[in-house]
Length: 89
Image 1 (spheres, rainbow, N blue to C red):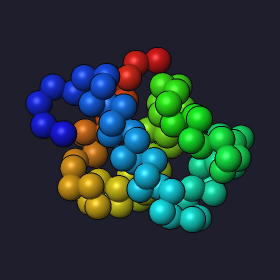
Image 2: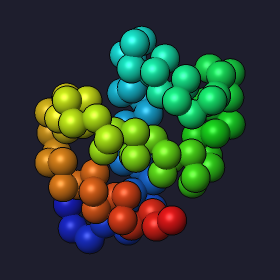
Image 3: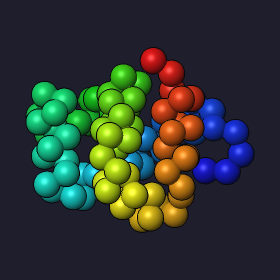
């Protein structure tokens, strides 16, 4: 994610984070529990900005998880902060 972080780029980054998190059973289970969602809700929710914001907030609140994602995605934690800021509210 180079250049200016637009809301559109931020949404793409959040979707990438969701795909990554979905591959980590314990972490996605914890996210679902915290968000009050069921696995069956993920596909619908993935198109909602508020859900994507909550996903970025979840990553930002868990530094080890954030660092794991950033390492796997070859990006800095600052990119996640910028994405969260770009998505607003």
